[in-house]
Image 1 (cartoon, rainbow, N blue to C red):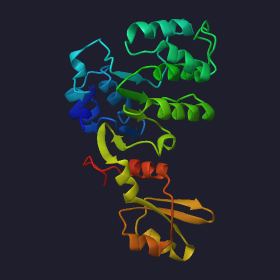
Image 2 (image 1 turned 45 degrees about the vertical axis):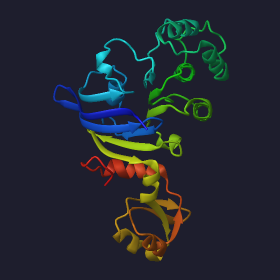
Image 3 (image 1 turned 180 degrees about the vertical axis):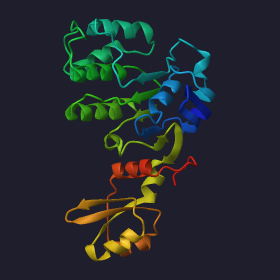
Image 4 (image 1 turned 60 degrees about the vertical axis):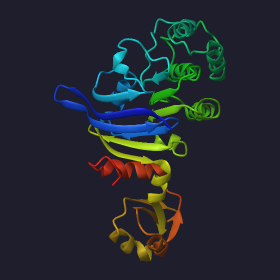
Length: 290
């Protein structure tokens, strides 16, 4: 399997601020990478560097090419969706379709119009300026799903969307779009993709502090429903998180032996957001999960 993304010692500074501080990352083709971190961790800067919109220093290969060698020219093999809408307010929906048709050789206009109808946007003469953030997000999602890209970079792709359309987007994305593509998603709602991602990366202050395959992650992090009489024993084992669960507490542990977990109590499904919060609260400087 080839690598879709490869960086080594990737750096981007804004004056004294190290937005990217030596990122070493390799993502195989066909992976679904979930990229998480606190605000200001460097997630958007990394996505923009991969998309060729930010010039960083170090080794950077995207689909086998260095995006810095094509300044000002978008890569037709990838699509990038930023958190904020970049569509001109003076445009009508029809103008946006015309623009994408001209600038992206892999854009399917008929498919875009079909997704717009599914999103409830049927009037192509609508001007973008007066539209709500949610409607603009639906339009951008429809455009995204109409680009036949090998690499999909999504920065908070569903910001502004209501829960119903958010679920509709992921269903459409997975059923008809994502297979065979490499996907990188930045989101503050990791629960949206909890069962979808194949790899997890955690950024903190511009550094990659954790990178792991999802299957190994699920094996290492386990939750146990502990009865009150064993709570003190469980706390002595330094749980990563404790959350209420039907009158008792569910303890999240990492790398505990199976016999220890069984002695403490009944195993319950691990809440993925708890794992993410644990990683963000105790990052490791080694570039691998602690």
